[in-house]
Each structure stands twice: as C-alpha cells, then as structure tokens.
Length: 392
Ligand code: NAD
Ligand code: MG
Image (cartoon, rainbow, N blue to C red; front, side):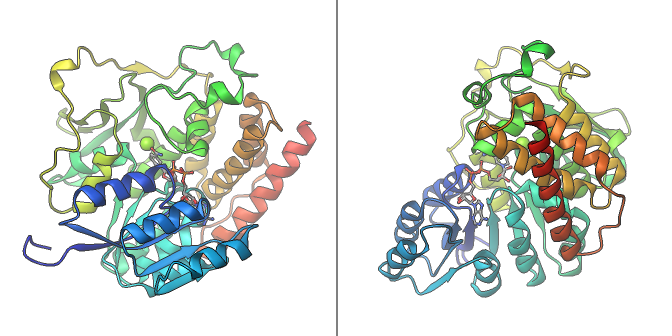
C-alpha cells in the first residue's frame, strides 16, 4: 500500500485485552494509515462496543459467555452492520469480513481458527497469539505459504528476530539469542518459589500484560512458548535457540550469524513498537510513539538462566524436541494450570508439576491437522485437571 492508496483495513481480535488496546492506540494515532473495520473479544463487552463506535467498524464478534442475553441487547442497540456471536464468532468474522490484515491479539488456544480463516483467504496475520503458533505452528506456517500470506509476529522477541533477519538468509543463522527479563522471581532463591502468592507473581518488573502471560513470565513458561514460537516462525531447531536473562528489556532478542556477527533490535519496552512494525510492514512508518532515549541506557547485562530454577522452561524445550502434538498439549495444560493458580487452587510450584505430569503421560503422535490440535487440546486439559485434583 503506497501513501496514495487507501488505508490498511484491520480486523482486531482480542481488542479489549492488553495487546488489543495497544493495537487500537497505534491505529488511533496513525489514523491516516490504518482503518479498524472490525473488532472482537470475549470479555468486557462494554469496552468492545465503545471501540466499535469509536472506529465505526463494520463488524463485531463476541464470544458469548454467561451474560449472552444482556450482551445481545447491548450489541443490537449499537447499530453495527455485521455482528457475529456464539462459539465460532471469531472464525466466522475472520472468514466473512472485508479487511487487509488480521491482528490476532486473542489469548490462548481460541486464536487458532480465526488465524486459519484469514490465511486460507490469503490474508496476512499480525500475530500476538503465540499459543496457536506453538500448538499448530507447522500447519499455520504451511497454510501461509500455500496461500501467499504472511505471519507477522507481534511478540517483541520475534519482532526483533524478524527485523534482524530482513535482508538475510535463514541458513546464515548460527544461533538465536532470546532475551527474557527473568520475570518477577529472577532474584528469588529456588526454594522460595514454591509458595509465592498470586499478587507477587502478577508483579512483572518491566512489562504490563494480561494475567495469563504475566504468570507464564513468572514461571518462564512464556519464554518456553517463545522458544517454540521462534522454531515455528524461523525454522531454527531447539539446540540453536538460547535463552538469556537481560534485566533491562531493551534488547528484544538477537541473531548470531555464521560469520560470527550478532544483530540485535533495541527499544524501550513498549509493545506498541512491535505492533506498529507488524501493522506497517513492509514499510516503516514515521512515528513519534516510541522514544527510546539511548542516552539514558547506562548498561545492558546478559546472564545465563540458572539451571533447575525454572522447570517450565525445560519442559517447553522437551516439548519442542518431542514435537507432534506435545507442544499443543503442554500449551493447553498450561492454560488450565495457570487458571488454577490464579484462582488459588494450586501453589505456584505446582504449575510445573501439572505440566510435567501431562508431558510424561502424553503419547508421541503426529500433528496432522487442526482437528488433531483440537483433540490434543481437549485431552490435555482433561489430564491437567486430573493432575490438579490429585495434587490437592
Ligand atoms: P489479555 O488477557 O489482556 O487479552 C486477551 C483478549 O482476548 C481479550 O480481549 C479477551 O476478551 C480475548 N479473548 C480471550 N479468549 C477469547 C475467546 N475464547 N474468544 C474471543 N476472545 C477471547 O491478553 P494479552 O496480554 O493482551 O495477550 C494476548 C495475546 O498476546 C496472548 O497470546 C499473549 O501471549 C500475547 N502477547 C502478549 C503480550 C503483552 O504484552 N500483553 C506480549 C507478547 C505476546
Ligand atoms: Mg515476548
């Protein structure tokens, strides 16, 4: 799209969440380049309808939960031309709305079908929803290639890697250095981690995010998901992806090349930058949204992840090495375990135990299609729920 042509039309799913709100902010401030034509979410219907009105969208999707009657009335009164509701609302919206880019900011496994629906139409996806790349990566990436569409990562690390790889060949990569702040427990002793509170686990040192990813950042399972995500996006095997603790969250990741050169991408930690990059790709938009102020960066440190301290990270590496449906199973089990922790049904240290028991029980089987992913998802949730019951 050149400056003269029409604005890029965005369908923003997960619009009421942490990433979704940042996406809307970027679209709002660059209204000359982006037009939000559809929004979707599951929670905060009032916020969703407000966004729909602000951007005068064509289409709204709401995955109805308990308050379906009230929700229906509120949406009906909003005058939005196309409304999708019910269990497959997001997929139907992605398949039946006119747009140029799907911005998938849904959390958890529910993001898979809409991504597939967009890719099948040859529409590119700006993807924050890492769980679905973890679960169905090979299927999603093949779909993108088959239909000539792109998967553009919003996750800051993968946006960094993507940017480092512009103009490079994938076989020039020696290694990917995935940075992590280390989460809220980086300075805790391993023994202290077992019984930390929900409130403490929700205090992330550098990023403000949704609850599920914040807990994943405390166990480092989030980094594990990101190792798998990097494998899916860039085809780099587990043994050439290394996680490194970088407390400042300024270097968002690095690529080491076969000649020994290392490239990195830096900025203040603000998700609006990787969002802006994914939305504007293949262009770079002139923007004053993000001011990094390099003169204020006094030091950048890189430390190894202490071994044995974050078992969820090791479990994710094992899941990637085993392949097939194992990553899908672990990702689903983690949703159940994190939910149980947030609702005070298991201790922090037991999140890893739930994942380990699902990993141990899981059979090796090929990842054939989306139905296989869904089946694995359901079975893994059941196993995780059983593991939680037997822990208590
Ligand atoms: P969040 O919980 O703040 O928001 C999630 C959004 O998805 C909400 O709008 C919610 O209503 C919607 N949603 C959830 N389940 C749904 C369903 N079944 N149907 C329809 N809508 C549903 O989460 P977040 O922090 O914005 O994260 C979103 C995704 O982005 C996650 O996959 C996360 O891992 C990834 N991500 C987030 C960050 C961050 O800084 N928050 C950074 C990198 C990646
Ligand atoms: Mg990340």
